[in-house]
Amino acid sequence: MAGVKGRVFLSGVVEPDGSVSELKIVKGLQPQADKEALRVVGLYRAWQPALKDGKPVRQAFNYSVVFPDNPITNYDSISHSLVDYFNDKFQYTQEPKEYHFRRLIPVDNNGVVTADVVFEEFKKKEWKPYMSATYVKKPMMYKIKDGNKVDSLPAYRITARDQNWNSYVPEMVFQTNGLLLSTTEYQGGGFQEVSHVHYYPSGILKEQLMADGANQMLVIWHDNGQIAEVIRRERPQAMAPMEERIMGLWSKTGQQYVKDGNGWAVKQEKEATSQGQLVNGYKEGRWISKLTDSTLYIDEFYSAGVLTKGTIYDKGDVRTYTEGGVSPQFKGGLPALGQFLSQNLRYPAEASRRNVSGKVYLTFVVCEDGSLCDYEVIKGIGSGCDEEALRVVKEMSGKWQPGVQRGKKVRVKYNLPVTFMLN
Image (cartoon, rainbow, N blue to C red):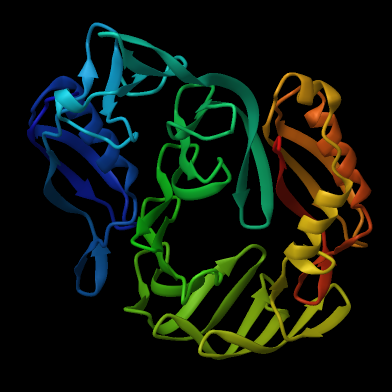
């Protein structure tokens, strides 16, 4: 629908339960745009119904959907690619006299990458291959969390990464029927997520993570299309972890509990419902969680968002704690981890002969006793480096402090890049 601009006018009826019926086009724009407008408005099922004598009733309504004209200026119809140009310092430029590198991203009519992302360099008055990011379309099982239930459905993931695992297009996950499940953008070697959009299997928007300067904004929706939560993530100082502030909170029917970070919050979290006071986005005072049968599950106290004391009643196991969650770490911290790798990593002879260097990306699980399991090489560089990285990581088993969740040691998946650099 590139180049389509204008409004689609619709009419319908809001039912007493907040759903929509009899949705139809009053004034269309273009067949595809009309169809998309009907689909999007039909997804939203949490309208506030009209009231008569204090009771909800059916009410006709009119609505318009705007399609702004956002022309794609870098699309090349001959190569069916998005083309961007860079100067000799690899800085983006639109000045033809500065063109030194260019990037070609092959895409289909929906803007989804279809082949390797290619970089070219302008040499001797012609464009020549410089490097590429490999296109991969891989089947997978996509996990879906619904409260305390976890299910999965068949899907496929599309990526385009270079040999150092840098990503040049958003990672996209689709259902086998073609419906989009998620898009994720990474930086910093492919492990640092900077933004994402997730969808319910029905196609309804589920959550969106957006960069807001050095901070982040996370918006979450209920599965009926009603906005559920707005969370602001802020980093108080460099290298410090992100702090979360709940700025808005709504029920599935549209009742707003929290506005501008203040109010009495009611949240459904896995198998329990928690509630308590929010002040400027931070938990304050007593927060309790109860199971569906109203049994007390968690009893915690906060001061300006910082947990001071908590008790969990977990199937007969009563635990008290002063930290909600602790991530696993190598004993002695990151300096000790770096020292262990430098002392134990041996450069493979084959890699040295072939002048191979780079990073091997692995994942593993830190178990409750500090041992490691479920090792996997996500991205290797070959020539014996993958096997050597895996060998050294396995030697770390037992040298970790496990993760802790509400006073209980838990299994946690951990990502680790291992660097091989020739002197």
